[in-house]
Image 1 (cartoon, helix red, strand yellow):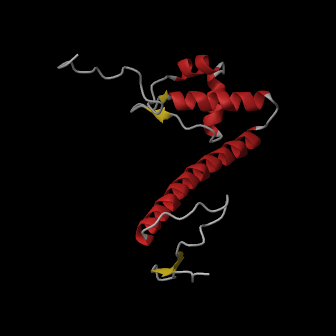
Image 2 (cartoon, helix red, strand yellow):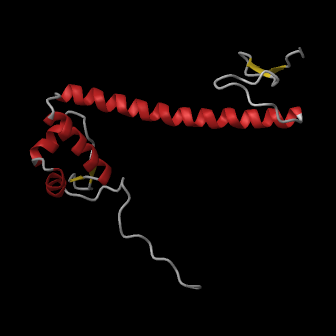
Length: 150
């Protein structure tokens, strides 16, 4: 309806540390002491209140469920730590790859605009032969090489 203001969502963000340890333990099916152990081992880092009480976010709850599943399948805490590290690295690399793909596409579009024509699509996995070759120098300068016509 016009003139009607939307109300903010009452659900906390996935990073908002809102669950006390007893609620987090109930939501994950783990004992509170297990949650403390995981924290001591560096597998989880809950938020803290001014008085030092632990507060868990929805993201923490999800991580605790993953840890519980891995340990239930016989993986030790060091193995769990390594798996979580590798998953985080993989996620970061995946995001970086998406950024680089978008950047390359932007550069290709810019080069096509500079060339004033839309080149034919190259075979899958190859760079178009009629676009300039870009090289960066150690000083950070960009050198554009144009391939000769065949």
